[in-house]
Length: 284
Image (cartoon, rainbow, N blue to C red; front, side, top):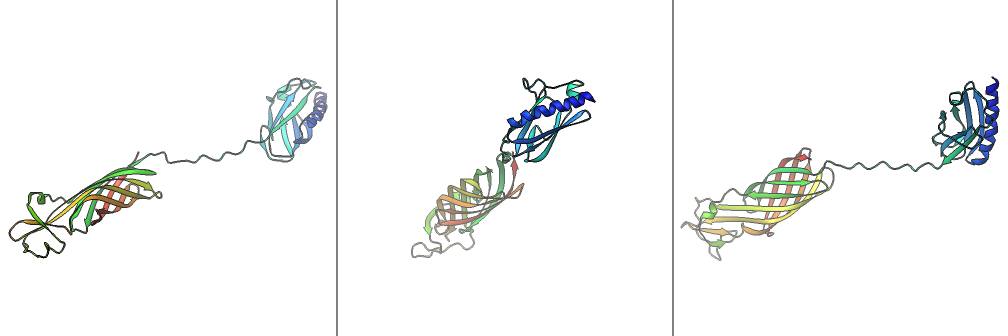
């Protein structure tokens, strides 16, 4: 046991030097327990603590000794922090009168906030089949295709699916109530109205939340309603007809993977139309 007792005496001599060198570490004590040495210290402030050991009176220090406990990591402030050094495994039998300890403490690195995880799935592509009805009484069908994430785009094409009107001769224009000027002509009661309607629109999309997106677009629209006179000719009803700039706005609802759209569209602020779209979307 003489060798171990000499080792303990040397350790205490070295500790007196270490206390003077490190103000943050105080009240350093050491005790040999069989083949293990326990080093106890007080730490004034939370720090990153490292212990260096020299066996040649401080000429060379190393941090490769086998130590465990309150060392080589961030240690909270407090008393009686313990380090256990497997001295026998590192040194073996012998007298070591020149052992020294050195504590090195550093302010811990600030805790970095966790990175914000963003949606990396990319743009969502969607397709809807649309139906509409407007103030001219012309139903239309069509489709919308587009993409969206935080922002997006869309293209909508609509038609009334009745192009017979294009083959009929239009001789005049009437008002919504059928009057041409001050005259109410005779209309064929057995004739169906001839209608034609087309609309094309492009626009943008903006996310309001994870399920609701705002839509707005502009394009061209044409809606024509023709009534047949008794003699067989047709007159265009200006009250129900319009052509020019289409302006629309609405909402897109994302039900994953289904999509529902609701839009209001006007042609030259003369004819107003409500559109409903149902479809689905894919994520890239």
